Length: 511
Picture 1 (cartoon, rainbow, N blue to C red):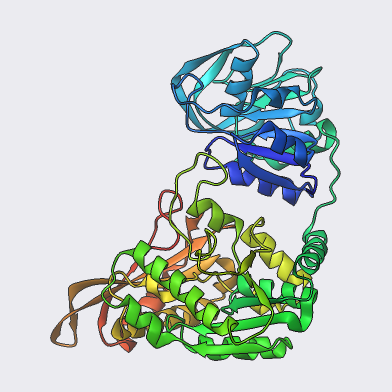
Picture 2 (picture 1 turned 180 degrees about the vertical axis):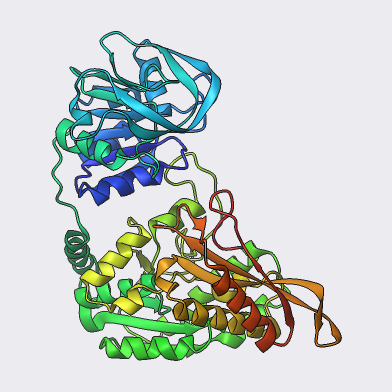
């Protein structure tokens, strides 16, 4: 097993994934594992340091989460963040108590003495607090290294044992120098080098694929989106003509998208098998309104179509998927005590009747890292810059029954929205933009006539990796133009609304 320089143990914080992202941005590779990961498994990864994440529980809760006590006996540095700090305090005999009031939001951090973990960062820096409990008495051999107005022990350390803890969250955007603090822990405390980047990741994955696949063939479903295009290109680099790339038109794509996908892969010198399976998908989705059922039907149908195509080729033993870290995290609680948000059609393994082995080269990286990887592999910038598009396609952007009329309205509205977004120069300024057909009708007036037609919602967000997102604050002129064109050019729509919710609490997609 490869070495994982920093192991992050997840205690359920919504920010845990950001810890790994920030470290990787600093060139230090990190992976997230559940808090309950066995000590044997952790030893196998041969880490140079361990980070205990935050979490929603109190250390005094009956069902609070605790790691193996041997984590502190490995002789390597440990950093506790928020809940992780409270665990460390309790573990070594200190006292944790409920705060008089929950501290949530920005605070100024002031140093108390010198500490390597604060090197090259400024005293009085802004950090983000989010906690209900606080440390009231330090364990023996621990000292205060920083404080804030409301947290007398905002950071503590046992320098001899190389154990450090922050009451605040260095991983979030609002902590001014949080990335540097995490890098300092990895570099100065753990002795890690900044050697990880997408270039080294690409070489490692290409070698890994070659060794695992050998002279066998890999079936890879492609959609033309960033994820599947990067997977296909990575596989083509690794195994050449042993890649069987299949594009399934499931009838749920955007306008003219099928033709664009075929042209793009042809230009890359990758043979592409195109299958029009739209009738199969749409027939199975008829009358289905539950979003989870939609996703499952689409996922199962994809696999059936792939299996049928695979039987036409000798030597296919693997199925490649563009599963990302965010897909895994949102689908199942494999990384810790976090709640399932929604299932993803490409997560969770294969049904028992399939004999393929899964190849998921992007499973451990985030969306922004996938884009970097695509550029590293030589994919064109305009393709890499495409907004994310969900695997289930437009089916989860139609609220309710998926039918030809609904898809027509959705495609036309999405095309208009994309055109205006590009015309105003905002396409590259937002992370994702799309329209949603609400299947909610309202009264309108067009000319002198009363209308009772459908409503379209425009959804545009700003994000880095899809784990969190805020709605895009766009010029009103742009929103007005999008609304005007959609209502005037598409029969059947008389109202356009704009979604101003962020993630969390909402998700980016509506279903």
